[in-house]
Image 1 (cartoon, helix red, strand yellow):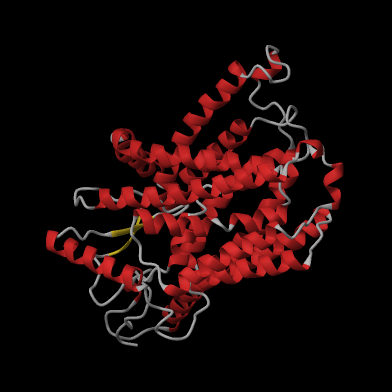
Image 2 (spheres, helix red, strand yellow):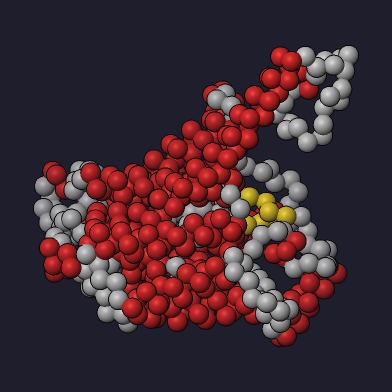
Amino acid sequence: LGEPPESLPAALDRAIWPCDGRMGESKLRAIVLKLAVLFATDGLLKWGSLVVFCVQNSFHPIILRLATTEASRHERASTSAIIFFSEAAKMLLSMLLLLAEERLNLRRTISIIHQDWIMCFGASLNLAIPAVIYAIQNALLQISAGHLFAALWQVTYQGKILVTAIFSVVILQKQIKRYQWLAIFSMGLGIAAVQVANTKEAKQASMANASEQNSTIGLALLLVACCCSGFASVYTEKMLKNVGQSSDQKKLSVWLQNMQLSFFSMAVLSCTWASEVLFSSTAEGLGEETSFNLLRGFTPKTWLMSMNNAVGGLLVALVIKHADNILRGFTSAFATINSALLSVFFFDFELRPMFAVGALIVLVSTMLYGGVLRLPGAWWNSEFEFCAVRHAANGSAAQQNGSYGKRYFVSDAETSQQASEPDEKSKTRDEAADVSPMTSWFTRGRFFS
């Protein structure tokens, strides 16, 4: 006990070790207490964030369905207004998390916002495009939830993994191995099986918008939302990879970037809401004073949906930080199963064999794509020959030009987190960064969902 072991956390102050090499009983008790608190806190954050993440994802489609079907189209709150308040709450929460990151130093937090954002406002405009796309995505998700059953909505929305993978191959030229192509193909079959299962909700007829619901419209809107999610994620990753080439770029706080994204989304949503009020000739009660009320049509379920959207994106950041890839994959799959079971309770959803088979295929494909499940053999874990040749040629050209830069992954709450140093010849890009494609989806796909 004369020298502190190297494995002690950095949080322990080295001043607790006496200079004469001996340790008193009180000192030992203090160290044990500090270590117990430290590791207990870490475990609490890990498992606590996973539990809350699972609960939030399980109830997310249920809350959307309840809030979007409790009133007819003319009586519901404006979609733009709902997302506006969601982004406002997300911006406030991000500011509080930034304050916590700076150890509750309010002056330091204000200084960071002023120097890294206000004084460099032009640089933050790069986030305006993905912010607009994510706002459109959120609007499509809300509208589609009013047309589709909650369980069907949840399973179909997993198709964003497929879309993100395709955009990653086309735009980023990401390496996709054989087992991942198999997962993509299987996921498409699973989603198709879910659509033809002919399921229904017994309580659909009693919903306020029952006459307005159209499964074809809902499915089309949801697929467009999947495309928005995939494209925005890949676009932002490509943008940050290009920006990251410059060594003079300062790494910004994750929470500050969330604030920037929310700000641009709120600006666009404000204009959208104003245009709805001023130029929608079919809106009921246009010209009345109440039609200009931003809170028109808001109910407790509407507020719950708005706040759930705000918390959901930021919650993913905690899961990414404190839990590993496999636990996140199982938690997401478990949440999908929970959503189907909760639909039975809330909406009398009929679970039919075809739907169960399709949902199971989607879940297995999700875990296979992310590496939670593994196929034996080197053949499944290698690329197709034409892909390997293309990536080898691109890699050689990049090395000759000296253009290998840092690899970046974009997350729902970690928009510009640097994930690795330059690639190694003996490893693939994902292996060098120690980040699997499933991690890329988890860290990209659900920022604003």
